[in-house]
Length: 127
Image (cartoon, rainbow, N blue to C red; front, side):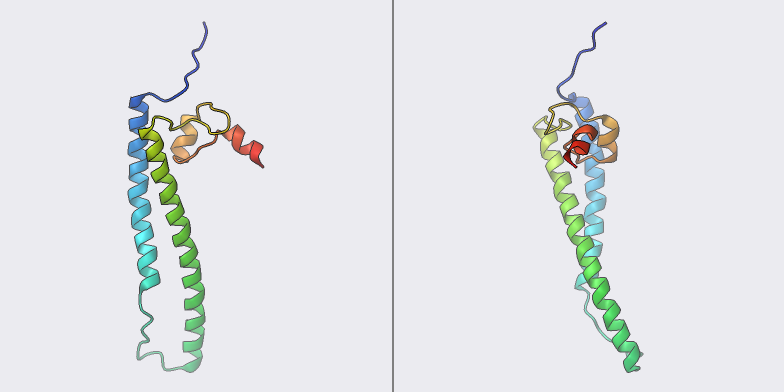
């Protein structure tokens, strides 16, 4: 019995992945909005900030956390872009095809990393 080698996922499978990606995209956008709102909140000092030492320590912690939040927001934005690109590949019916080998990326990998463009083997060979 010979196994037929498929060169793409069928429309039903693509629809399943599309829904998975849309769900992840919705959550990613909400997370990004939370991060962005955290960054844009004004740094109003309360009346309780009367101790100069406390104020200096708080401002230092605030700067550090803003940098970290900024990096997280950038990563989240990049993740959103990758998910959007995956939706385009679904529409083009090229989703799930490794850009290096042309082979199908396993469903397990795509469920774990829905924006993947490489099979595990191709990813490992990159390093």
